[in-house]
Amino acid sequence: MLDLRDVTKSFGGNRVLDGISLTVERGEMVCLIGASGSGKSTLLRCINLLEPIDDGAVFLDGQDISEPGLNPDPVRRRIGMVFQSYNLFPHMTAEENVMLAPRRVHGKSREALRPKVTELFTRFGLADRMQHFPDQLSGGQQQRVAIVRALAMRPEIMLFDEITSALDPELVGEVLDVLRQLRSEGMTMVLATHEMKFAAELADKICFLDAGRIAEQGPPSEIFKAPKKDRTRAFLARIL
Amino acid sequence: MTLQEKTDGAAAAAAPPRRTRRQAYETRVRRRSNTVAAVSTALVVLAIVTLVPMAPGWEAVKKSFFNAEVFAQTFPRLVQAFLWDIAIFAWSVPLITVIALAIALARDTRNPALFPLRLFGILYTDIFRGIPVILVVYLIGFGIPGLGLPRPWNSPYIWGTVALVLTYSAYVAEIFRSGIESIHDSQRAAASSLGLSQSDTMRFVVLPQAIRRVVPANMNMLIALQKDVALLSFIGPVEVLRQAGVFKSLLANFTPYVGAALIFLSVTIPATRYADYLIARQRRERS
Image (cartoon, rainbow over all chains, first blue to last red; front, side, top):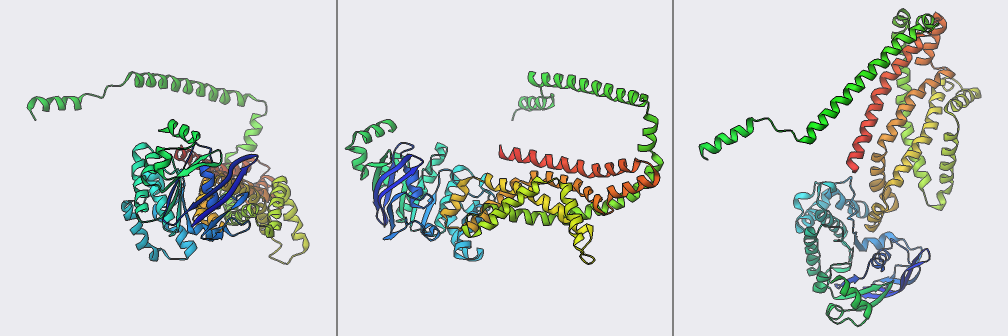
């Protein structure tokens, strides 16, 4: 479904992505791991066209979405993204945050959206938080609203950029539960994460990024139990 | 609950709350600094009250600037003339808001087809921020009616207002632009990732936050504008400063100017306090 071929990206003279090739099948969950600065976030931002890539190509269902000059808006509607710092719109209630894009992009009215949106909030345990503003919500609740906001656009694939890294430890669980739920519903997902236990439990594929390259990839059993590369071993020894 | 416990509870409630050592210390310090402030203020006031009348020209100044009789005679008319200031201010503000916002957005466009608009925005703010307000008032207020326009289009009320609106729009546009730039990129990224267009992102995500953020700065501009309305007196409108000038010539006394100053202060001091309050509240909210 998603196919990256030899993607490179530099900021100034700094090569952040150095020939990344990766495929994600429909319904798969892929976890990107690696030290900070290894290129995980940049890779996700490139898939979502928030950053243009320098060379290589990104295919979404066979369409080259990395073509320079392509209108990014229709592509982004098919790809949901959730950020480390939630990035909710602080001047809107949780419900307005979720409704804004479907209203403007799909031209639907609030009334038409309300049943579906209410159902999403309920599904993720936020039914009583719809009329709250972001600063009235805990970090975990804000992040769950951000996930609901992305889901409301009915994306075909979801990108998660270290979405639990800014949370207090006791709030991480509720956000990971949402991911488990999405996983069980068959959503295609790519995560940049430091939650190794979670990745080991649920991922189909683990990619270890090192200095802008995929140093090693494979099923979690392989990567976590029997890594082939020294670098992978050293990284895992440091964080586990 | 036993009887013993009951009486213990009552005793605890009745006893005055014990002050901590810190609180006692702070009360002492506060009391001392209040006393010092009161004494020093009293000394300064005393000095002014005794020294100023000793100046050789005091009697003359008192008669020509602080003449109670002239004040009572002219003040009501001054207040009436001030209604013009308020009117000019009132119809300038919405115009300034709209034009400033348009200029700020024009300076922010990245579309090459709209480059002329961007260039216009840059030139506009450079020119009107670079010329003293009084000069703009003169150039437009005398220049355009000089084209021989028919009544009422040669009115100095109209062209004076235009001069103020043009100048203040340039400043307010810059304030709006700084507000737009202060909104973190992550907000735009979040909006873009949802598939919102550039213009929707600006309209629904960036602008509402930016405008709220610059309300205190714009309050200060409004206070300045309210005073600058008096500049129009130089090209004709009989607003409060002009009216005071008329009385000055008529009565050969400067007291009407003091009256006009008091009228301005009665508006600007509450307005500045309100702006300060808004700034303080915003700082609290952000910390």
